[in-house]
Image (cartoon, rainbow, N blue to C red; front, side, top):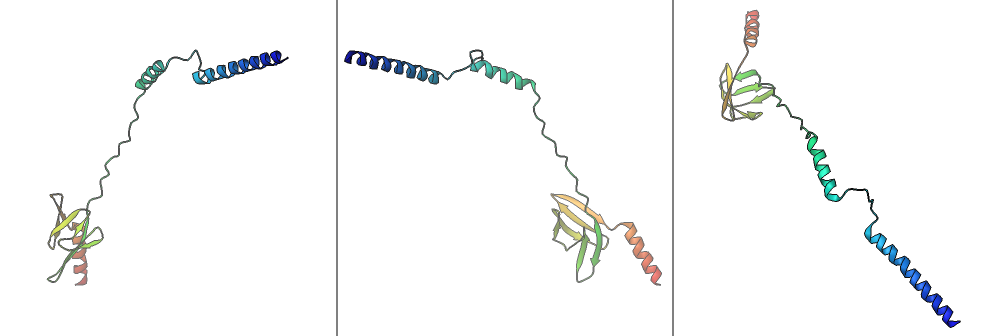
Length: 138
């Protein structure tokens, strides 16, 4: 009887080791599809696939030109000299949009931006309006 039990225990142990051993081998190998191509072939396939596709184009940002500086008015007297450019009051030495006011006369203003000279003058229509206003006062 002892011999039968011992044999039974040995058989059960061997069977259990066999099942666990097969399970360990299967999980270590990570069951994989036998029809799947090898990794190096997949890498070459991906490279060839992406080589045919056009590369994404970055949208080009068009340089927007800012509107030119507009001289609206000049306040010119012995005590002060002020130009009104784009609705801002500027004295000699002040700057607007990166341009520095370097000279101011009764007829116009000179600004310098990055070494370039910008000459602004009062438009003829403003001069004509002021002449009409002065003539109508007489």
